[in-house]
Length: 359
Image 1 (cartoon, rainbow, N blue to C red):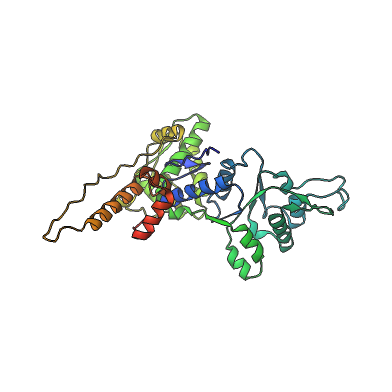
Image 2: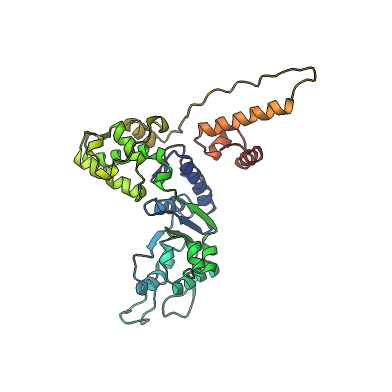
């Protein structure tokens, strides 16, 4: 299978970022997508893009030509969620005038995304466990189980391990879901991505209105990077949409930001420079690999003594420098660094661990 994933520094499946956290996440998504079978548990705060992660896994997997079926377990009342998930047979309850397949069956061959899985009641957790264990589903009122081939990706903002300890979530289901755990990092932990996200949203909302792109002045940008973003990327997107509508084609200054976003600016020397909007547009549309400049490495200088030199030590130090430079050029992406070094990814990771390199 040829993967459509491109995460050379711009984005993946609607997500965007150059921080080490996001590059590592893109790398994990690529591996998980190609495998195509194991259940995945995505944990992270609200607004961090958990559904985008699930969609990226599906769209770059062998299941991409079948349905991606999202279900928000917190948005559907408990009394309806069972029939929505598993379907029902005619006469199963008052009003069931004909049989109906559930979303699990509709996702057959594809991916079932269960958002806010922590809100699912225990009786449904038991039925979901059967889907994962036996690969079969039984409709409400039915007596004959039906086989299904579906990959389950679950997501939650809650701490499922704590819910297990508190008796609110089945331990066996938790371990069935968390075969591959992924973490969606909060925006406050990847402040270097904020300028790139802002520019992406400016382009997105300006194109809709056919306006000249709005811009953010440096002081306002630093203030936004100093804000903690409890609503994460979703909150940032909503803010930029508002700023574009109210400041069409103008430069937004600090005083034009809503008061709560006027945080204590981070010192400019501590922040990476943001790309101009035009450069970002070209980069995203062309999807060209990002070239990060790194200082050239000088060959090791041999210090000869009467006893000779420390050959192994010199070679080891030079190898360390090459690995660190490759990681610097790829923004911490180990897969891309391994490609630049013509090494297997597993070999590079083994060297990093063995040498205890600061990455």
